[in-house]
Image 1: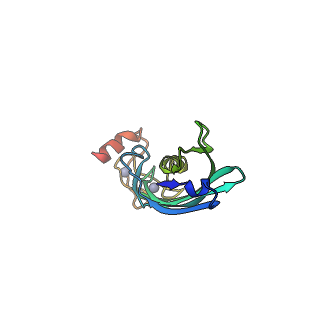
Image 2 (image 1 turned 90 degrees about the vertical axis):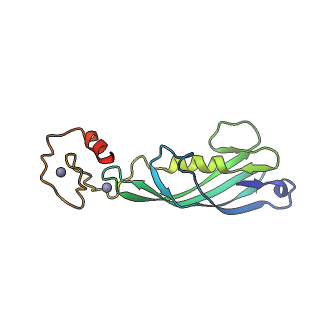
Image 3 (image 1 turned 135 degrees about the vertical axis):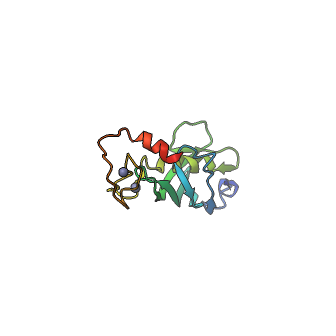
Amino acid sequence: MKINLTRMQKGEVNSLPFEFDYSISLEEQFETAGIIEATPIHISGKVAQVSSEMILEMTLTGELTFQCSRCLDATMFSLNRSFQKRLTNEESDDLETVPYTGYNIDLEETIIEEIVVSLPAQVLCNEDCKGLCPVCGVNLNNTTCNCDKEKINPHFEVLDDFFS
Ligand SMILES: [Zn+2]
Ligand SMILES: [Zn+2]
């Protein structure tokens, strides 16, 4: 995940392209994000010298599988994010900059940050997803039931049963 900047700092090149696949760790990095499965994230981009500054350009693509927020069915989300940030060798809290030290820049933290901000707050298999019956737990997209749905609320009691 490290890009060696030496050749650019010496003025030998003014662009350092890169391309690789990055496997995210669902347990360690995305524990609470609700992702069930993820393809390796394809990373491509370059570090470019633009007048006196070094600019990082990056595109992240991949397929993430979530549970539908209503019916819990596996639902695909396509990650596709492109951005530019300025490299800096000074301390900075600015999210538009990426810190580097010496001759290397480590992209891992930036990759994770950008994936996190791309994640949807809610994933639905379909905008009209009917969800689960709050009484018997059947998936109302596939089947119907005769439960009196007015009776039981909230939702959560049944979801608890559904998981146990
Ligand atoms: Zn659904
Ligand atoms: Zn029912």
